[in-house]
Image (cartoon, rainbow, N blue to C red; front, top):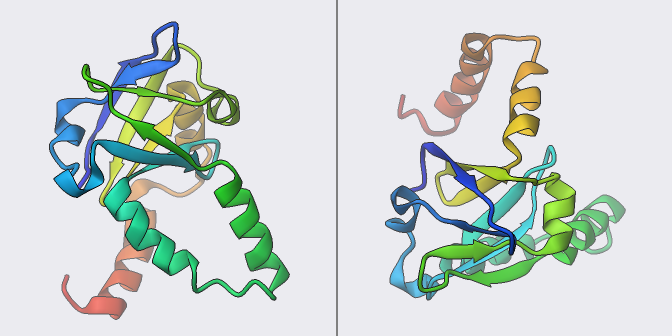
Length: 153
């Protein structure tokens, strides 16, 4: 499971080294491949190939006759790129995804259990500052949903 975060430099060829604390959770079934696509709030999402295959099953349940679901699928899948870790564990970010996330010199890599978010660190900082409620207030709301759904906490 991906967790934690790291700030990484982008080189002149739009690559960054995926930190070891994230690489260790990429299973052999992923063949060192990540599927990177447009995320939310000006971020990118990166799934190891094996996790992407699981997620595609979920996406296949969307109703193409529902205009919102159809629009989402088109927008989400339009930006999908398969990226392979090179021999130095670098990931090449495609230019259209760099533009979407407004990535410049650095990326913030954030673990989200089965996937990774990739952010421009300044945009992530602005995003974090836009919430009117505190972390504790949000945690209370989210925990109530989690408790109701699985009674484990």
